[in-house]
Picture 1 (cartoon, rainbow, N blue to C red):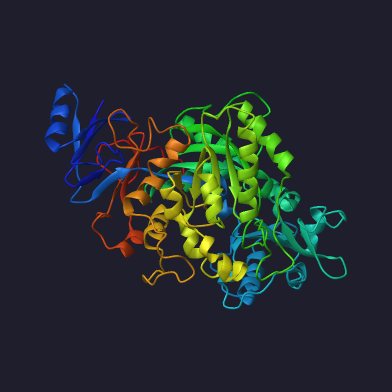
Picture 2: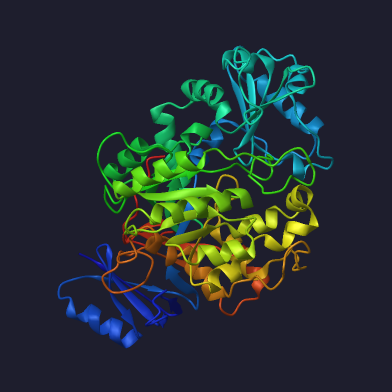
Length: 544
């Protein structure tokens, strides 16, 4: 068994007892020595008859592999199957793009566009079924907003999905005009009948397996070695565990996947089922929607839609019963909560649950916590929870959030430092494909809290930044700990699995604004290269 000795730069280990080192030694899939160069060379010499490959860092930094704690991985993997609208900047451009794309698609086939964001247009305009119908396309068409919680469809798509024949749909699920007719705007789970039709047409097992492999190698380029894949099948964001398992069995999965699903399994197993490559993480529950789609649940109405306060998807009793069932089966729960009303409900129901059960072995994972009042943070710190945050969104929401919330509520947004200083465990994530799958953007956003040019974000409290080390920890050390894997992942430490990345430069000395441009030179998972090339050192199998 060969060894890899890495030296010649700085090693940030993530281990509080020994945060920095000069060198490390990998054998098989484990770190077997971390320390001074002399200590690590001596460890290498003790292994008789083993070849040692040496890698000089050239002054660069090696760190634990990035673990993205909230990632809709299969949704990202299948982006290339659909029309990507993220770079559109006007309604006219959107319509022209759809029209041109339609020429390549057989008549009668579905067209799905993804990741449009009207708040990034030069002039934000509302989409509707009549706008899409004006194209006169021989296709059912559904466009999904970048948040994944709001969609718009043409008449043919509404017919094929059965929504035109469903007069009892509530205003939380669909929008109607003054005459009671559907506008084509669909929210949350109401879009699932349409999205299932699209999936049946496009998402074959062969395409999905190759798509997952491609996506894994894409994120490996950013230094990512594991993701916590958040299944949202009822939103068209299901995770393809068969593709994960198939690739892992071939030695062709470029990242580790810890999966959370939005329904309890119908047979008995608990969090931790699987192995270190593909593992069942637990249950994913949505309490509300998104700010951009006006479906995040707020205590007071939206500033730009005075008759709307968003949607709570469960009653307290429904949520309690779901959490109780999960807890009784030792299943960890991720809970999506963006608006202050959803956070209030999450706190209320978890407190009620804890009064009737023993404290669970693994904490509840509260996702997002975007509109979070100081008194709610005080409540959170008394509960066994993890705060899963998405710092990149504090940058990308800079136009949308003030419009939706008004100035009075902006002090409650993205208060990372306050959350960190409560003692809660924080984990960082991209929420990809809502954001780019590059955690260095998140690390930069957490530390800089600025525009790309360094100008402070005017809508946020500038004091709510994290230190660089705090930001690194929430993307490396903390996610495995939150999932119950902190004893083998997340640190460069003897005996831990050899997941690490080597980056260009040293984030501890570079200017803050350079953090967002950081690139990985090499990424290793289980001791094998998932990105980069070293002569005679093994790679993850590439089936693309």
